Image: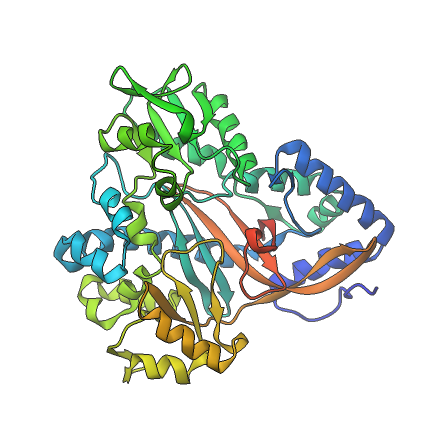
Length: 452
C-alpha cells in the first residue's frame, strides 16, 4: 500500500483530495481505527441503510468554492426551469405530455390531480462534474432521499482526527440541509399547520434518513411522526397517523410503489385525492422528474418553450436525450434517423427505462455487447425508454479498507446537490467501481465539503 504523495500536480479540487489521502497514508494503523470510528459513528448518528451503517469511504467529497457555486446555481435553475416547462409543454395539455413521456395510466390518474402548493418543493439532482461545469443526468423529485443523511455524515467526518488535521491546512465548510427542509415543507403548508407525517413503508432501506429529518421537525416544535401509509386512516374528514391528525404529509413513498400496494394504502390515496392535507411533494412532481423529460428540454421540437439563456443552460448542463421511437431528430447539428443512429453509435450512448429508479436496467453502450444493445433498442420502442448521450464519468481515488488493509482505489463519482424550494442546501456524492452509481446497487455515499 502506497499513499499518493502531496507533491503531485493535480487540478485544485483534487489537490485537496490528494492531501487528505496522503494524511491517511502516513499512518495506516490510525486510518484503520478511524474507519472503525466512522462506521460506529454512522450507526450512532442514524446514518443507516438497510439496518447497517451506510456504505461509505474514509474521505469525503471536495469541491472548490467556484465549482460548488456553479453546481448549486445551475442545478437550482435547471430544476425550476423543468418544473415550469412541465406546466407549459404541449400548450399545457397534460394528456399530450403523458403520451410523450409514456406515463403509465395508473400513475397518470394521480398526476392529473391538482394539489395546493408547488409541484416540486424538495429534490435531488444527479450530476457528473466535468471540466466545463456540471452535467446533470437525472432529476429525482419523487421522494428524494439523503437530505438528512448528508448532515449527519458531515458531523461524523468532522469528528475524525484526519479531517481535523486536514481542516487546519484548508479552509473547509459544509452546507447543512435539514433546517431548510423543515422550512421548505412548512412554507408549503397553511399557517395553522403543526403536525407532519413523514410517510413511507416501514421496511424501506432509507428509514434512517427519515428519522433524522423527523428529529429536525421535532426540534422546531412540530409534532412529527414517521408513518407507514398502510397504517394511516381517514376519519372526521382528515388524514390520521395513529392519534395524530396530519396537517402536512412529507411524502417519501414513491408513487409507483404506492400504486403497487393501492389496496393497502387506500386511506392515504383518498386523503390525497380529497385534499385532506398538504402533500410535499405532490404527485405532479413526476412530470419534470421523468427520465424522458430531458427529451423535452433537449429536443429541438420544444425549443420555443425556452428563452435564449435557458437554451444555453440546457445545452451546457444537460446531455442530448430522446424518447426511443421511430422518428427523425437532430444530433450534433445534423438530422438523423433515431433508431439506426442509436444502434450504430452504441459507445456514445446510454439506454434507461423512463420510469425506473435505483439504477435498475440501465444499459451503458460501450459496456454492452452489440447484439444485446440492438435487441434492447428494438424492445425500447415498445416501452417508455430513453436514450441519452453518455457523459464521461469522473473518477477520484478514495481510501478504502479491504481485508483489514488500507488501500487507495479509483472510483467513479456522481455529485448530488439537493434542492429545497430554492433555499441554501448541501450535497452528497456517491462513488462506485461500476458505471451505474447507486447506493442501492452497491455504491457508497459521502458528504460534499467546500474547500476555499
